[in-house]
Image 1 (cartoon, rainbow, N blue to C red):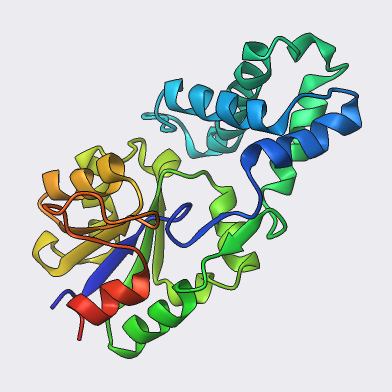
Image 2: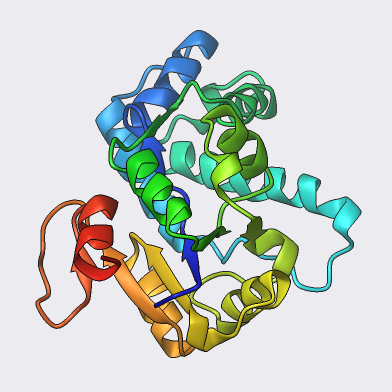
Length: 234
């Protein structure tokens, strides 16, 4: 039986209430820029996937917040550049600053309905719970705003570690912070590569939270956290 479970955050515990494209365009339209939310959504994910890992090895902690903002600002700028409308913004950084602050609140996020019941069951079972995420420092605010923070004994993010999943370093660092060995840990996340394969390659037992469908029979996967709890932890 695992003694600690490391959870991914976005896509595992909570997700965007609407699409990213819809949220971006809600703000962009206020700056006089009108583009299809569907096109923005696709362009965003293309830009996001092409971006380097959100980790800044060797960086002083005092500089991390600025680097996080700049990382996301470049992704957003590339999103609108691909659509040919970047120059339509009178002040792109002003626009993005509003958007960035919005994503630090609970407003754009939705906690998946299976999350709190499952976390409660794990906690009542005496298992330690922690978060391991490639998100930025806003995660602390978001988890608190969504009333999830109290479930977790520790939070580890890539920008503070200087390495992002699937890098082995972020997994081992998270366990060292929590004072647990690899043999007593499980990782659960929604990314096959970053979460599942990353954890497996670090020697950690893993489950893939595939909320869409069971697609690969040879992978330990579930569509909800409750299914994972009922199948593995009872």
